[in-house]
Length: 518
Image (tube, rainbow, N blue to C red; front, side):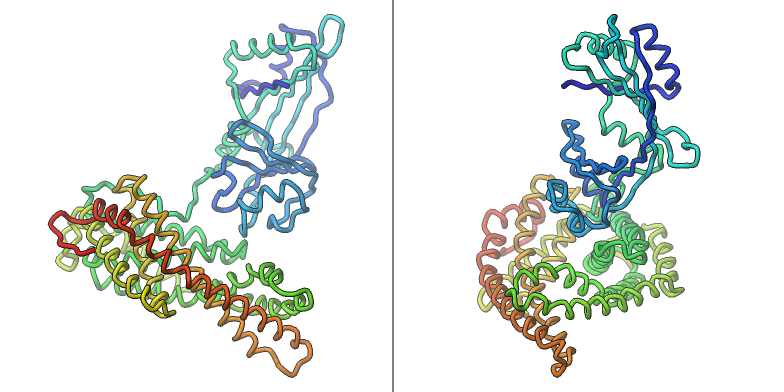
């Protein structure tokens, strides 16, 4: 059944609607309602980026798709669990899980919806349409100030003529047709929230003629901002991805300072590379434990029924370790030492760039720097990868994984300088190789961690007998999976080093005067 929604002018209110309806049709006002509404998303806007919103209105939870302005699904709920996996089974959970994954659902804004209902009557005093005047207000004592108002109209079956007449009336009198997206963005804007304002992905627009010093600082500023935005989420322990995004920004920063030599003063880059390396070391154990804990259900499913409960003491042990590591990270993030690092680094980034004898590449056009560094790293990966194909040993694969990360970071830093569709093709092929090498590395770490845990558990304690057996079973399964991933490397690298991929790298990054044997 067709419905209409109009966003009303800011000076329009319920009384003016009553006055307007009096001149158009007979009506009767019904008792109004007040309903609390809470809008949810993840910190990195996973629902908004899929053109969706999740909101709790009264005791009902709704997932709405902006595209097409349609309700995807809903279910009764008095509150939203922190994580989707804790939701009741059903279509809502099934839809949300692959989108939200391990991220926590955050209550972005809470409002009160004041609804006034009007029954539109015909000459026989029969109801032929319904109008709802909706006023979304800040959740404060007394209702708070109004954020956005709208009129919703719905016909009664068999009486479409009056609905069409009212619909045309509002449209011809300057009311703006709206959607749920308009209500969403209007509420967010008035609440001081900018949807989609955070992403850990590198989103930097560079001018090809920009000097390299200014360009690199622009990249470093972006990464520094990502780090700072994730600090409170780490300290509040909202979800594991705050640590992950923080570490990736730190790692990208170290990579930029290392790979883009000669652009910024060497003494400063050496100092901050060391500072960020210390940060990486500090957060390593916490991230490793997070990755392991996220695998709990996977590990349980891998085990035979008789050993499934054997992993309970293992994960209890890991959660205790994680609490200790989190506290170490919290203390450092609140320490005077960390404050000095951030303050000094911020001042360094704000220093003007320009001619500097200690930074010979500072004034070089960034497009030339990007091509040179990307192509140099790519050639190294081709060389090391071809060598790794011959033996496929663990050390070579580990080194190659690090080299691939460095290349990926360089391409991401400078992607705006090149055709987006071609960069997308390169990154797609690179992700296949990185996924293969990353899976191999993760499985290696998981096996080592399980064996370390087994050594820590008291073998003579009957409580741990089943746990040690479960660890042995898991290690055997993971080693087999690791072997399968290793076997796939040769074919995966062959795709990455294919002629078509090599030609695309040459087209985008190889200098015309450079002699290359790739």
